Length: 238
Image (cartoon, rainbow, N blue to C red; front, top):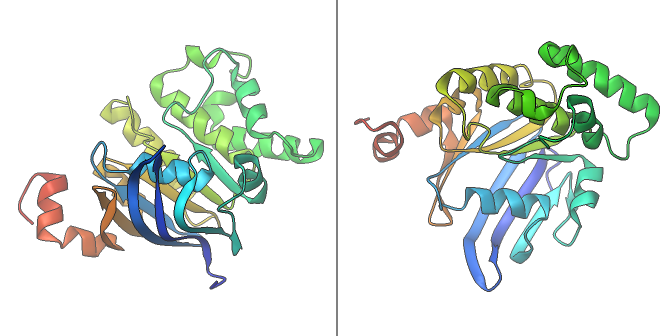
């Protein structure tokens, strides 16, 4: 495997029970890259994310993380290698801000935990003064920021996110995008599964999934120059 690739999916077939949802997905993600995976509801975005983290089993193909085949690895093993995951919900509402972050630090040494907390609270300063507050007391946008912070506690090499805009108003979407923009170029790769094309401003590359298959993969500029895709996602002629 090329050392530049921190994540590689090769001919991945996956789904639920005996029902495949993904059909032969090929995808490479390089170090320091932000890949936005676009698709409508039911296209297979969440299935792909859950397969990457190990929540769903591979039916065919392979997944390589940092050069190692992790197709049969459990979720905690993949996390231990440098993978982090933020779901649509992202946080546990009945736990405090601090407790949520500590869950993200599971398995780290005490000295490392202290350092990670300092970095996350520095990144999301509005959470620092509310460490003991329940996550349920936060606004929707703040919960998403906490979810990102929880995922960052493990200092991942690859951060995968499923619909970070889910349930948010346009104002909070802008806030989440602004926070994620501070993470670009910091050495870690990000894979963001989304319907909201606003996240393209973060991306180096775009992958479009339709019917469980990759219908387009290329740079953001190339995507915006594709008339059919541009019309489908932006609602206007290219």
